[in-house]
Structures are given as structure tokens and as C-alpha cells.
Image (cartoon, rainbow, N blue to C red):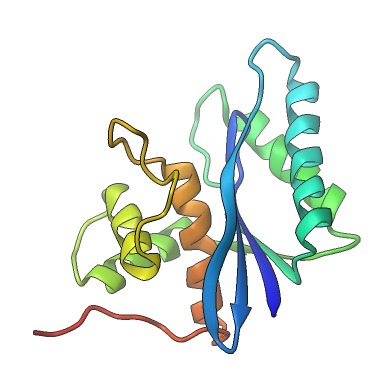
Length: 174
């Protein structure tokens, strides 16, 4: 059994997924959200996120951690997101093999999985459900897709497939 961690790393909410691979088959061990308190300072929030990730990594001991690559626009939140990514890398690089996986590659994985076109966030959730079946917490009680968790699961799964660690699952032709 080999354990891997996937992250959709951000400043306010970080989605994470812990998966295990046994004989080329991937399954989800844990997934969730790390939410920061908006009343805390920027530094406290970044510290909380990186410490929470470090705690999860110490608990599950992943061989590799793969995060969705940082994509920021010209918004007021861009700098805290970049600082969070930098703090994460500085804290984790000494002990873990770290990789980035581009968000466009995650969307491509979802499109390939479903045999559809487009870039709607919901296709990632649909692809995760197709790959793993119903995933508790992927959708809220009211049916809203939790894209932070979905992206973390998709990120690590797509990376594992790209690296040939697990087999790809494609749209079945009828």
C-alpha cells in the first residue's frame, strides 16, 4: 500500500484528499476542507493551513503530495494565495516529494473521463463520482458541488494516472 495526498491549496479554504494505491487500484482514505478564520491575521491563516497540511501528512505519511498549481488573477486575494503556496512548499519540501499539477490538466482529466467538452467546474465532480462512486462530502446536503474537495481528489487521481501508477478509466463507448 502506498499513500498519496492531493491538495487544492488556497488561502481561505484548502481541499485535501488522502488516497491509497494497492495493486494499481486507488481508493480514498480521507478528504475534507481546511478552513481558515477570516478574523485572524494573514500570517495566522497561512500558518493554520500549512500546519494542518503538515499534521495530515504526519498522520498518513504520503509518499508524494500533489497540489493543484497556483493560478491567480489580478485580484486583491492573489498575494495571500501565493504566500500560502510558498509557505506550504517551504514547510513541506524537506520531508516530502512535492509536485504541482496544472488545473487545465485536471479539467482535461475530467473531460476525458466523461467524454464531454467544456470547462464547467461541475464536470470535475461528475468525473470523481464516475471514478469512485458516491463520495461523502463531495456535495452538500442541498446538492451544491464542493469544488475544493473535488479538485483535490481529481488532482491526485489524474496525477497518479499520468504517472502510470494507476490505470486510466475512460468513457465507455456504447
